[in-house]
Length: 307
Image (cartoon, rainbow, N blue to C red; front, side, top):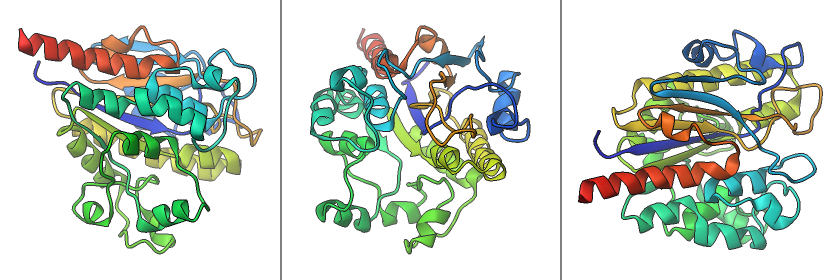
């Protein structure tokens, strides 16, 4: 095995629920590639482990009462520290000053760079985003702070045109509708872009919020369409993975798997790992284990190379 690479694909608001008309994830037409690869529907308790593949449910509640939320869930994933326990509650939306106390010293990107490895955020950003931050109309997301505190550049219009950035909706349609000059692309093209970035960096992160938006909208047919887009994207990423690259798919909380409520859910979230390092994640039980496992894999590979 050569130098390992990891693509961390974050899907917002995707849990493992029960089958029924409330759950578009259980629709066989929603995510056929994913279900075919795992040989089972994506439902509560789903588990599969084979060479180069792992699917298991992991806890997103983090031992803190209340419904899991984005800011603390994402901070936990990207630092390995229980942000909900640190805050004493689940925190919605954006990263405040106290969460930055975890992100700045323990952020995945900063720790990867400290090992002498490379990291990148694949998401497309725009000047309008940073203008809104400066005008205090928006606040920093967790992944923005993760990238910023590591001193890494953001991918802008030039990178998008070069096929080196992806908008969070995968195809760029939402960005285009907001006046950003992003010609829409297919999920397959976006998947190839992400795989190419992942094949040239030690750790590549991409965040997709489509599933969470679909859950809050509570529209079944639209949710199925969103999940189909994600499924096509995932299939393309996997098809283009380099031999030493591993894809990690995880979420921060449940949502789209239960359209009977606009709220998040207490359901476990899927951890789906495809690639040569898949078995290294078999011990993962909750969101705190993702970053430490990636770092352990990179550290071990470095030690092997140096010896």
